[in-house]
Amino acid sequence: NFQWHRKYKLPPGPRGLPFFGNMFQMPPYHQGPWAQELAQKYGEMFTLHIANTPWIFLNTPRAVSDLLETRSAIYSSRPRFPYASTLASGGCRVVLQPYGARWRAVRKVMHGILPAKNGGTFAPFQDVESRQLVADVYRHPGMWWKANQRFANGVVMGMVFGKRVVGEGRGEGEGEGEGEESFGGKSNVDRLFDTSQEFIAALQPGANLVDTFHFLDRLPRPLKWWTRRGEEAFQRLLDVYGAEVDELKKRMERGACPPCFASKFLENPESERLGETQRLFALGSLMEAGSDTSRMTLSQIVAAAATDRRWVEEAQAALDRVCGVAARLPEFSDRGELPYLSAVVKEGFRWRPFAEIGMFHTLIKDDVYEGYHFPAGTVFTWNAWHIALNPDAYPDPLRFWPERWLDPSIKSVDPSKVEDPLAGHWSFGAGRRVCTGDHVGDSNVWVAAARLLYCFDFEQVAGKEIDTLNMNVAEHRRAPFEVKITARSEAHRKLVERCGGETVGVAY
Ligand code: HEM
Image (cartoon, rainbow, N blue to C red):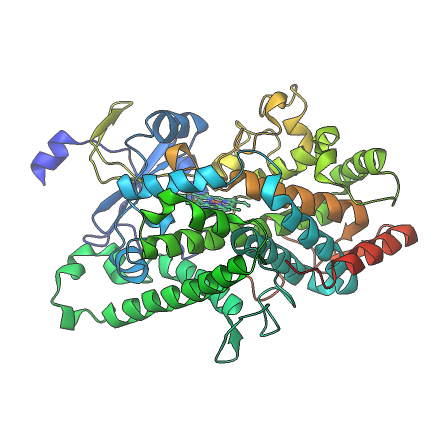
């Protein structure tokens, strides 16, 4: 209305429809190129309207840093999701919780347990699963993407619940360890990872109208056609998380559970104050946030390796200098001597950000910036794809170029920060809302990438060249692209067979 427009001023943006705003203009997935085009047209910021909520895209590192980081105290909430958050998650899903006391309490306990740097409690899980990764890739090279998935799920399952995933990675109904219940032919681990996919689907624009058109939430209950579905989804989550925690408690009582996030979390007196439902969701949120993210980053590194041998040769030469030729797998303790591999991981996070249009941060108080006046409730995000592929921020941005993190003559980031997972890119988010698992994610990818590159060569398949700007690494049911993977030599083949053999039958 007139008064609103007199008081507030938003950056320009494309015209939308009355009532719906720009919601139909936003592609349902792979939104990066579309948001990149808008950034090229409108400059440092642009505004979209999703129904009646303004969404402001921040298109430069300067704007992201000024608002989401420096003013993080007021730019760190989340939009309201009456279905995905309130109904289907009981308000307990960390990633969607509004900025406030409950969210702060959960983050505090998580921070106390998750490592502030590489290594520690979770390294044994990462070690075993990444050895199995190289063995799986060797045995079934055409199923490399499934092996990545198995690795990512296996690490997060070990790390959170101290439990080994046997079989192909989503359980596939194979023995998941003692106490594993089977629901309709599926193991609880299958169901656990299914809930993550359900959650991702529920967050897609337009998936649940009430999450966009909040007035629908005021309808009388019998008219809210989504209520039952949401309540069932919530109950399913409680069952799945609850079954996992019950089994964990039994293993803890028998002294048969290795130190893991959940064992430490359940023993932490501060976690008790969170209440049972919140405790279950804190564990479930880590599973959800920690698995696909590592898988997708690894898939991108595989694509980069197959499409550009220049950096692979550098990485392999660095690995051979430290580990010898086919002598032993790289270990976490080698990391200090392998800055090139840390640069590979950083580049893996920057190269094609899979959170292509960032993640929504809601402003909780009116704010003024660069002549604009933003109302509380405005949603902000960093335009991840555009920033990562902008030559002003990253020279030759399409190239997978680890050297950009090590060589000060290539303008990217201070080389002394190569071991800091957050420095120089936004793939873990920004400000107070930044990913709590940055060190776990970074070390997952480090050990997996180092071992894969040490053991294998990667090539494109003739006639099926990889389009690295259109890979859809989010797809988990089939290969996002084809790639030929072979052992680097006969000696590497033997090493892989030996290391893979060692992981068979390892149980936690
Ligand atoms: C492997 C690569 C990973 C990437 C690229 C990644 C990326 C992200 C991003 C972009 C966000 C949203 C940040 C924001 O809103 O500003 C996030 C949030 C989060 N991540 Fe990660 N993540 C990764 C791994 C992990 C792992 C391994 C864990 C758990 C051990 C984890 C736990 C979380 C949690 C709990 C949140 C929600 C934070 C909140 O809303 O307060 N992530 N992550």
